[in-house]
Length: 104
Image 1 (cartoon, rainbow, N blue to C red):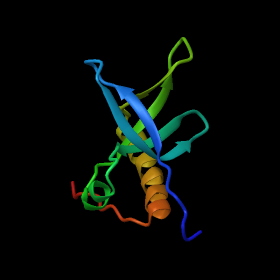
Image 2: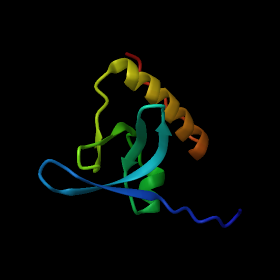
Image 3: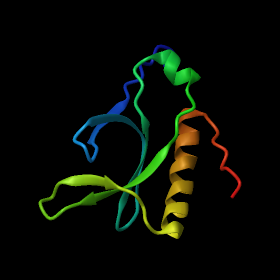
Image 4: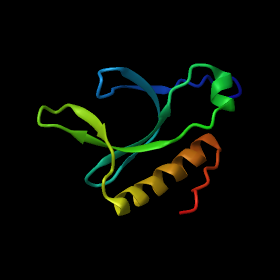
């Protein structure tokens, strides 16, 4: 496992203006009813990744009437807190990092 090559899962998202943005899928969590993801802005340069302090974004995967999936913000604060705690614990464990929750 010493020379294991890291291959990130890249998600392409179009913003409201039609611009393509690339995000790295850090972790995925499925509850009984919903699917959630933790993503961060994708960086190709190793130095950017190491030096960067990237925000982790937690979103809900939603399916429209055509069966197409898209990502949306979690509107319910309690739902967000629960899902965010689960996903961040998974991210911390997987990547051996610690994120500190800012004091409210």
